Image (cartoon, rainbow, N blue to C red; front, side):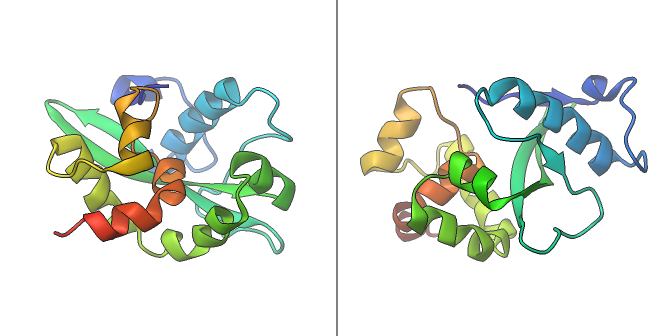
Length: 155
């Protein structure tokens, strides 16, 4: 799956709880995820401005927003119940990294931008995943390949 690039036009007519840009993007992204996640248990629930409920995990997602000629990375948050997190990220070690990486958003965005700009070309399975054209530097990809990416990325 290639990365979806969002534009402000995607927000036309979108209603969200508060109407801010982040919540509207979250609403659009929730629709996008719902269409992609066949067989995913439960519904996609975006957090907006609230914290994750007890027993759930706040999972960041990186959206690319085209503003004129520039690409901007925007973060929206999804609330996942334990069974949803297991379905989305089946490997226990990768699931355990989610809270840690959620606290490292600026570094993850820099890695994402370096991959996009071609200043970081991951090797091994991380590089192979991107080389197929079926993956892009999403939070899922960054979480799955964190050990390699954090070793290879030097700002």
